[in-house]
Image 1 (cartoon, rainbow over the protein chains, first blue to last red):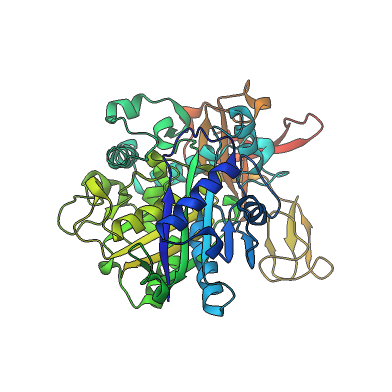
Image 2 (cartoon, rainbow over the protein chains, first blue to last red):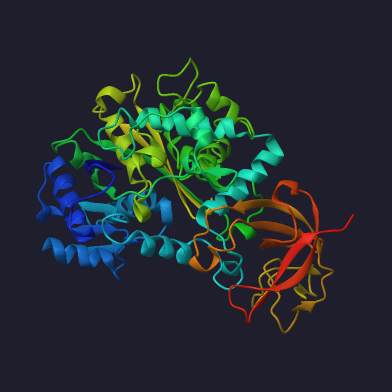
Amino acid sequence: MAAIAGIAELPQGRSDLPNTMALHQRLAQMAVADAGLALKDVDAILTVSPRADPYLIHATGVAEHLGLQPAVTLTVEAGGAAPATMVEAARGLIASGTAHTVLCIAADMPLGGVTRNTYVNTLAEVGPVHPDLERPYGPSVPAMFALVARAHMDRYGTKPEHLAAVAIQNRRAAMRHPNAHYREAFDIAAYLASKMIADPLRLLDCAPVSDGGGAFVVTSAERARHLRAKPVDVLATGFSSGHMHLSAAASLTGFGAGEALERALAHAHLSRDSLDMAMVYDCFTIAMLVNLEDLGFVAKGEAGPAFVDGLFEPEGISGSLAVNTHGGLLSHGHPARAGGMGHLIEAVVQLRREADARQLDKADIAMVHGMGGVFATHGVLLLGAS
Amino acid sequence: MLPYCTACEKYHWPLRAACPHCGAEAESGAGWREAKGGGTIASYSVVVRAVNPELKDDAPYVIAFVELDEGVRLFTNIVNAAPEELRCGQRVQCRFEPSMDPELWVPVFAPEKA
């Protein structure tokens, strides 16, 4: 079995570092130090090419920047499923004996690294939209999620108040996280007053644009027990891939997150009841509701009312499941191509019982869900405190 | 016109070298067939904040998925309709209009006349 032996995260928001390579370097140093290792111990580097500063064979560039010649450099492309994909690749490298200490970094600087207009245009160009057949109609990333929100409202009666409950709970969680990008409280009136972006999604339904991301070190579980930090075991992974373009999806209201979780649970011989927390990909409020339903934590159409009832609160009522205790992409921050690293880091922090004001009483098994594209590809990790 | 496979008698979109339903290649099955142009709105969004600079002056505009009667889903615009009168399941009919590139005319949809 593989384990996560070290983690690193900087405050999300506007970085004062000069560029994305400097951010990768800082995170690399922090993650290996957290594990009680040195950079020279690293024999594999996995990264995601940042949107603010794209590179060919980016991981190889990071290795050069760090002054390392590792056996393996691998640049991963899986959208918001990249953190889970990196863990899967890392444990494969360790199991095969190809590498022993795998440093995984996903970080981006859409605020500090490029001008806003350049960034938004890049986003429009590379969104999960067909360049010839769909781009002429003027899609935006929020608009693609708005199509799912409208279809979900039409089919299940989901209301703006349900979306607001997601946004407000995430913000409350972020207020307890020193690295979170947005930490000012807001209420439902402020939510309803926030400007419409792509009806029915308002500004506060959309994750912010943040500089940030994180890093982690994977090694064998056995070796991790002799290192500095409390190790977190990789119990199982699961993946699914449904469509690339939303127009090709079988349904507009349900997607593949549940298949990924089922595969992970089967590998680990666990059930949903054994999970103490769920980190769910929430680039938009509607993504949280749809993914929670698809993951099978609540019946289709019932995630909105359940959220209003506090069923996914960190200090919830009996039978509740703590969701996104760090504030999610919506408030902890959305560092472009590094989206979802915050979910993984938070699960590790909770399992290590280092979450301070956010610490859950019971924190033995965590689920981390990541999603690439518009509900297109899903990766699920089951992590356990050792 | 829509891509149509004579091997399995189904429409598909977009055009591919082989039918995504049955795998028949263009020589043996896949081709084009006339579509009637009618369909229903599967979902829609009024885009208030356009991302593409060339569409800033057009906002707000309506993007939508239309399920054609032939069984394929198109990403498109809804035109000639007040946004507040739109709903999922509404009948729409195809027409062609110039896109951001004036040389390129694209299929868009307008509500069917009652």
